Image (tube, rainbow, N blue to C red):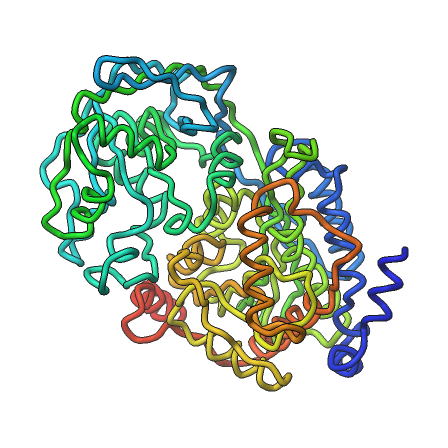
Length: 550
């Protein structure tokens, strides 16, 4: 109650005057904080898919959407869209070791490496498998780049670098400079190694090119994996028997034992003429059981049917899932609460639903979707994109929300990555109308465009962005905002300390949600169709949709 009263007192100035013009009293900072506090509480157990925490989350979201005055948006009048997945988790201890220079080096899972499997196996049992360094593990014909050349990876472990070849290069080359491409994402590395027939793949972790510390890798790498349900043949084709990460210090030791300098080989991998390198007599052994089981998780879907163009839609989305229960942190906390990532986004979607429902019916149908399994590879969004509840060709736009800041207001608002889509200019325009501005993603090297749920829609051609917090704090400027952001990613990203606090200042959450409302209202009542910039990688897919729509 103390926090709610404090939030109400903070509800002044620009937000308060704007609220007078909005239905339902406008965006309420107190409601946003209340939703985050509840969703990030211990009772919700870190909101992992297919757990008791999911059930509590779904129940809460359905009730809040019902109270907001919107309607069920799932099939047959349901509030949910079922998403069938397979959950795979290490069952018991991991026995892993390296043979280097004739000596056996034991490896601690979670410390030296993180080892997992999504292959349809009951156990992984690899004995002295040779290792091959394949640089960045990229095959990009359109960029005239192939790290694999003609290497045969059958029966071998591929060792790959994170990010892509331009990240630490002296000048931009075949890729996009420090702005990471999809080829730099860990998901691509695993996929390509499987296509090449590797027995396993290990990504070398480095904090700067990965954009997160080892603690984040450990948290996700020791959690259950999820995949969409596939035939056994498809699953074997798409997943190596073993996958995971290794610490850079371990990679350096492996390279040194092979008479190689890690940094020198890394520099060679930045060139298109790189060739894979056998890592001497290094041999990896790994044994562990894998528990696989089919599970059903859920997207929670609400809608507000359009008055004049109900067959056209605008989607507001955020992912509800986090990482559940993990190992105790320094304080003994085991719940990875997922407050900023991404209870803040879900809270905003709930508030948007309430405010839109309180106003005149929009021309286009609005969907409010809390997506599942984003942290497991954008699986809820990908499933929706394959099984849309409204045709994608008549979906005007997706406005996804991730990780709004609890640290007060900023002069700017950001979008994730460089989308090359008209929605970015739209965000700037509505921001300037509120005395703010849009800031391009200042950290393109982190590859955020490929790490949020909007990407699943973008791949299908739907104009889509993820809106996130800006850095230019009203109190302290960019320096203060960057310091807060860096501290969060260094300490709390995917960790137990990503938790709600009574010290939060939710005015920033409200101000950012207000801008999403402004843009959403414009899209809801417009005959305009947002578009990709000419030459953007998703322009062709939308072109096909435009033809279908016409």
